[in-house]
Image (cartoon, rainbow, N blue to C red):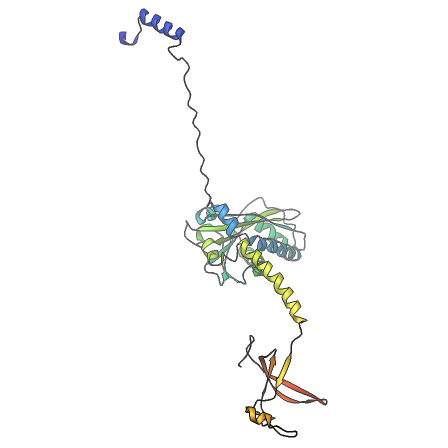
Length: 326
């Protein structure tokens, strides 16, 4: 203990040094600033940049489905796109409770399966509306009956039909319904660590509201990601605009259409010796096809003839659309 206690002389010396400023009694606090990392290749940025064209699909899908379900259920509905995110399949499927409505389908010719998932509360409300009810939410979530499962398949078919139509904006597809499940543990689309594009839509009626999810594998969209980029859609819109304008201008462009009855080879001397009433023998006869050219480009083959006193040619064959044989 004596080693740890200062003597009176040591205390006096320390106080004297403090008065002279030889000892700094203020503790220096070093400020430390932490750098927060920012991932430029984060999932949200990747989703927005690579799949921005899908936003047009979402908008059209919501509009089509709103009209279809409102007519089918005989009540006014409001269907809106909520959000889209890129998550691992394990996180995607674990977010759903049991029972839920899981509709597994294919987007041919894309490879793999996709998923339409509806919350149980929304399913019960939609089924109630299909049987003439108002869709008032039920207070108890239970397993679906066989009749309810048939109704789920019916409404799912309507939803997927509208999705197929909306997809025509970016890629012609044919949607094939594969299977309907009610438990998430029975739904196996991809590996647990594979990425999924999850698109959420809200459905609102007078007495109910709920969400349904479209889950598409990133690997499924990878082969057509160029078509889904904002750059591709801009170039496509520009190309379509100019194509229509060019087609409109070409329709009013005058061209020279020539029907070639036949050909013959002559020498310069024979041409110089030609007289009135001389006859040149051609390489074709009245029953042979003759060639029609547009600005000297062969385009059609036809038969010569007369229609109502006018010389005419009946088109019999179309040559190469980009030209013909010379």
